[in-house]
Length: 118
Image (cartoon, rainbow, N blue to C red; front, side, top):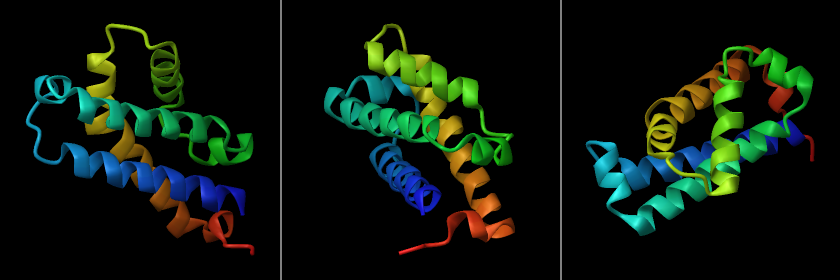
């Protein structure tokens, strides 16, 4: 049940980030909007922390996920380190969508990982 819930958290955060940034053309727009940036970074940190707590077996099944990228992004956001604009924009435009895609692929191929065991 835990992988199901964790992956749902990732999907919900990805949907929220996509909605917040859908009309943005570049990272300058995102960083010019402190309120939007704060919400986006909160969602990205939630994803990074959620992915860090996936079981090692499931992480291995998701071998193509950029685990180092998520770890580095999580550390940057947790430490409130600067500069991080490139890392955040990379996460918004590539890291997060790719991760969600890989999770959805695994969900189709091996649905047993994502069964709802209530």
